[in-house]
Length: 83
Image (cartoon, rainbow, N blue to C red; front, top):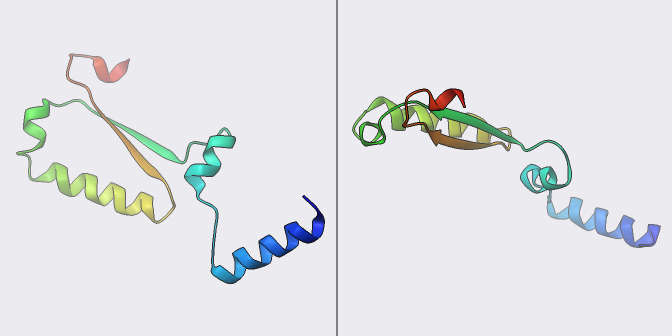
């Protein structure tokens, strides 16, 4: 791409308020822009525990402010959270 074309594209992107997605950028870098959370609980209890949905919502809210995403895993077997 010519320098003039690149400059035009960058100028239009700036005028439109576009910014690159960190998640997409992560595909071409070593950084995933994700936080992993392993929860060692019986999955049937997660839906009935009033704390858990609010906890996950709080994590998601904080991560979204920094363009990160949450990767959640529920470890059901004893000791599986250590694997």
